[in-house]
Amino acid sequence: MRLKHYDYSQAGLYFITLCVDNRESLFGEIIEDQMILNAAGAMIEREWQALQNRFPQIELHEYIIMPNHFHAILSLQTIPRHVGAPLVSALATQTFTKTISDIIGAFKSITTLEYIRGVKTSHWQSFDGKLWQRNFWEHVIRNDQTYNEIAQYIINNPQHWQIDTLKPT
Image: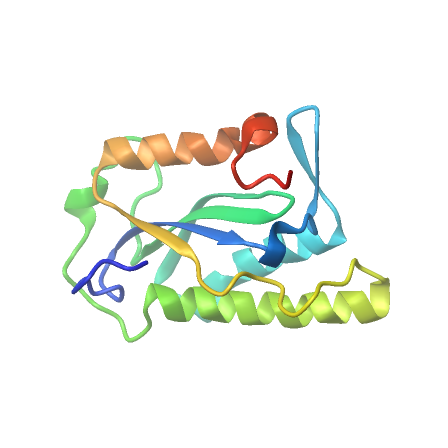
């Protein structure tokens, strides 16, 4: 799933997709093209935003929590967020000790533990085996045009739920 010989600890922009195991809808529902988070979905959002405290070298960009998956753009190192910023030229060759896999692994672990707590204390829907699928999908964003296209895809994702390939049948 990863690019051969690519250093995922280097500064850059990354598009990430995580799927709930068995694509179960655990985080809320789409109503009138809007994602309505349930308590579990709100926890996912809270823990995603808290990642910046755990990993100060990341910046979180656009993200969307869907009923059974999660899309996000994150960057390693601080990059200007305003639209039209020269994203690629702003990236240095600096590397960090943590990789994208380390960061996403921590997020998956933290959210799994919190979800289990919610099942036990707040009667959230239980899951069979594990909360997240084994791996995650990533794409290295290499230019402003790709960044803008992916950001729009994330923002508009709830409007395309009926035809989403990740929607359970």
